[in-house]
Length: 190
Image (cartoon, rainbow, N blue to C red; front, top):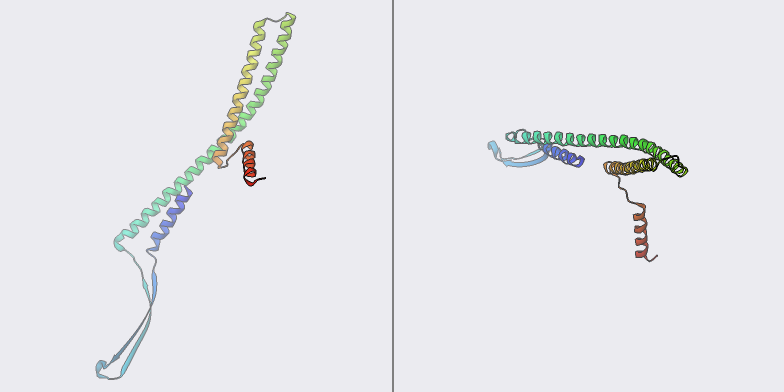
């Protein structure tokens, strides 16, 4: 969007240059003999600085310039709007990422607690003080909190990718870099 704005700005400069004056230096030399009955040779030399300026041209240049000016404003506003939306999206992504990280801490603690409860219920089942249904419920609850934690991990990865994409940074896994390095070494014979 910024490159479009710069292109329109250059086009506007070109349109405005039609109204710029152009300067020329003109040199004339005229020799006359016998003008007014006198037979002497008269040499007339003139040096002129001539300025030409296209003011109206039927109004088409002024209209074209106003069109380009409006186009520049439109492109500039579009670029500013895109930048604003992108900035808002990145801020939202960072806030969401922070919230997901907080939820991950809570989810991890909940999982540890539920897993400990399930293990304690299993010991009580073997001692005969708990029923199998209670133990299975405890393990099911631990499994559910573990699945919630896994979903939060995927959500964190997705939001991190969105941040990288919106900020224009690319990310390649470390394994890809090592493969590229190995391919380069094999090509170079090292």
